[in-house]
Image (cartoon, rainbow, N blue to C red; front, top):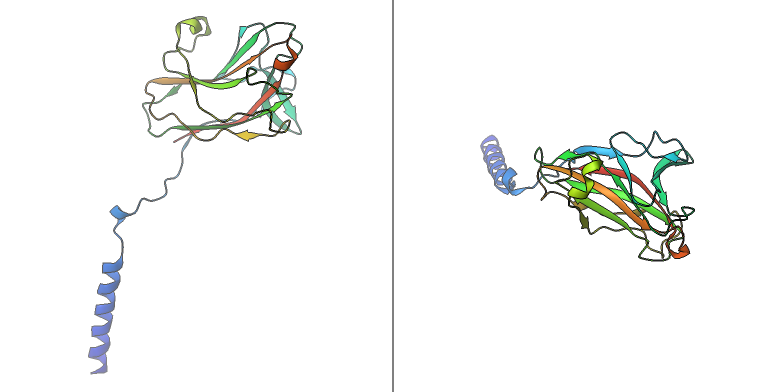
Length: 204
């Protein structure tokens, strides 16, 4: 009698447990992020013109380009108009190209810092293009879009790294290039700040 009662209890308990379980379709499992690209500038040579493999370092206006810098063993890309003696400096650091048709849900993050930044006209922008062909000789034939992103402001402390926030690139198809564009001046002291860029990651 006790065995029969115990068996009945276990069957009922088992059925109750099963009916209380949530089906796999009702649960969105946490998705592991897959990294497509990382750039930490670990191979930098301090104080030289940046020539990191895959990147294009381009002076659009003036002659100043991004440089490779290292501080306490950490490498990063840096740009400043200071010392250029040129009224306008516009420089681009253009990434390698990425095939956006191979995966979905692409996101980009990076960190940036400043020193001596006093004006919003001394800007750092994140740009993207899907019709740039990777040849800097054809740069003027390509279209670039500035994307909303968090960058350092004068209220940030010098060399305080700011997180860009997650930049959604998932709507783009074909080959995408992203770039960091800096505007400054070597003759206007309000526009000769330093920008540093590091810890770039593209993932989905």
